[in-house]
Length: 305
Image 1 (cartoon, helix red, strand yellow):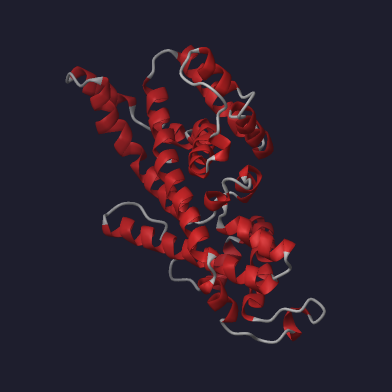
Image 2 (cartoon, helix red, strand yellow):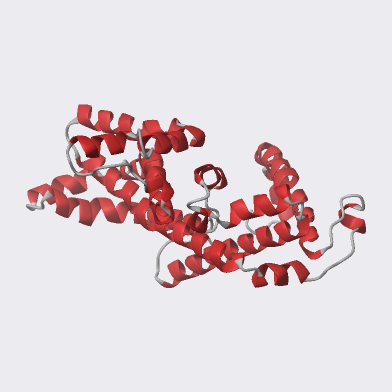
């Protein structure tokens, strides 16, 4: 089979390729065909002329974006929140999975799993509503608790402070996704050979040593692959949550690329400019995933290709 032509090998496995065909068609229709619309980033797009007949503008809208006063602000905010989310949110599911895998109390394990998984199924709108209720300046739960124990007097101005937005955004996201993100690591830990743990116990290894020497190396390839995938979405800070949490007080730290694209494109009708900004965002993500994948390969770890 190895020396046979590609067409012959495809025909030999035609049943498998037939199963693959619907997925390929779906990807082409919904992922590749719409990419033709990216050309409006290089055109003076006029809706009545359409994409094809609109005149070419070259890099005009990229130059405009890079020279805008908001360029530095939204790029800084997007990178700050993205790296903050990666640093805070990526290691915690790993630690939770290792802790759950090491516990002997199965009832406690199931309880913790249920409690940490549940927030994943809460919608973004509800999450933002909960944040607003908890941190309400006058009637918020956090404010009332702090007043009750004498740690704080007066109204809580967390929602009014621009510096508080990244912390509220990131940690509410960590709380929501912690348990769900740990599932894949728990699945990887299930492949650990228990005889290795038994041998380590006989040798006198502590639970912490077994986690560090057996469990962690087992899931390291999974960690690396997920880190590479996460790096490919480093600029894709969630639009819905950021937009819903925005207010006139925190706009200096909550305005990110995705919300700015929405305002420029949908509200103001500057379609070419918004397409140029979105394309710039996608290019940064593409460069990041290539860079992290290359670094992983050079370090001798797993890689996507």
